[in-house]
Each structure stands twice: as C-alpha cells, then as structure tokens.
Image (cartoon, rainbow, N blue to C red; front, top):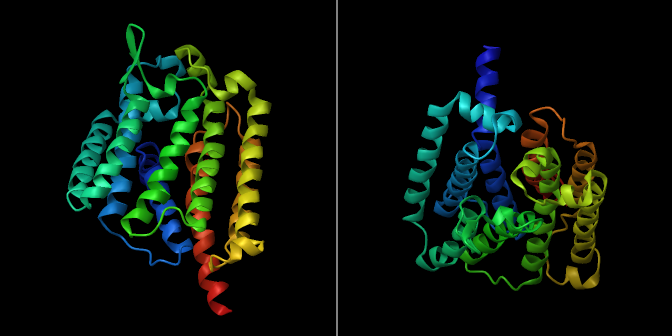
Length: 299
C-alpha cells in the first residue's frame, strides 16, 4: 500500500501534474483576489494542460541532451517509466487541443505568441549565427522568460477572458508580484541544476553570481514582492481600488518561501524543489482561500 502511494506521489511530482496544479492555483488566486468567482472552465483546463505539456516536452527534449551521470531525479523517473511518461505527454496534447476548442478566439490570438515563447524555451527555434538555440540558453535571462510567461498566463489571460481591464491598479500589482514570485522560486532550481547547466554550457544566475548571491537575489525579489503588497493594501492609493486586504496571507507565504530559498542547495532531497518549492504556489492560494473564508467573511 505504501509502495503504491509512493509510486503515485512520484508520478504526480515527476510527471509534472503537481506543477500544473500550481498553475491552476495561481489562476484561481487571481479570480479570488479580484473578487471574482472561482470557476473551472475551458481556460483553466487550457492553463493546466499547457503547463503539463510544456514541462513534459522540456523533459522529453532534455532526456536526449543531458548525460546519465548528471540527470537529476526528474529525468531518472522519466527514463524508468518511459511509456507512462510518453502517455502523459500525449494526454497533455489531447487535453490542450480539446480545451482550446472552447476558448474565445481573441484569447487564442493572445495565447499563440505566449505559447511560442514557452515552446522556444525548450525547442531550438531562435536563430543564432549558424545554428538555432533555445530561450533557456540565453544566459540568465531564461528565468525572466519563465516568470514573464507565468505572470501573463495566470493573471493577464484570466483577466482578459473575464472582460476586465488589465490596466487596473489591482491587476498591475498582481502581475508584477506574480512575476517576482515565480522568478524568486525558480532560482533554487538553477542552484540545484548548476552542474547540469555547466555541462550544457549555460550561464545561469547561480553560475554567474554563485549560490550565496543567488539566494540573496531571490530574497531581494521577495522583498520587492512584499513592498508591492504594502503599496497595494497599506496606503491610501491602494485602498481606493476597493479590494479586500490579502496582505496577511501574502506576507506569510513570503516568510515560508524565503526560508525554503535559503535552505536550497545542490544536494537537497529529490522532493525538496518539486514538492516544497513548487508547492509554494499552491500554499499561497490555500492561505488566501482560508483567509478569505474565515477572516474577511466574518467581519
């Protein structure tokens, strides 16, 4: 029984279901913080399956590029369960295409360049001299691309789909915070993958700045995240938006995330990054749900 549960848990983590639920959590958080009803619709399914597809596509392509001696647990699991891994990748494609059929056409037009950016992260689409490279090979900018895509996908796209303005104060604050948050929690992954990235000739933030300075950068980004919370919820201008004050659960999530950032090393256990660090997206959503349900609604 325990072995079966462990195998199922590994599949959720290394099959990229967990990170896909993280994308769903951030999207639902967007609705909740804008006082909109949380809903499971075609767009939410599209965000889920596109995340599942992109992360498994990246893993599929990386399996062929990374030496066996340096492959972290995510690649080892995919090789040991290759048929299940390929089945999951195929399922993500089917789910993505099925969801896209029910999306508004103008949203599809906006999502198309975003999707190309996401695919270009893993697939060599960009011309460079006599060859083609992936976005992740553009030195330290690769994390910025990841954070930007997550910010647009989990804030801007849901807002547009609901017919709201993306230029409202709340949406702008939330988008900036989302980008900073994803940027910060992605740095520990580059710390973990330092040896693999060195072998591939990539110049990631930990390779350029070192492990300690990379953690300080993540801490700085989380402090900017906290500053945006303060500016939105704790001054007169922010309160003009008429939104509920979600500062407490957001500050609490920053504290936990900061702790995990400084605990991250190249030798953390196989679940540290994929469950605990990625899980901060889900935890932040859960904290906001609890706060909204038991604190704000009792006042």
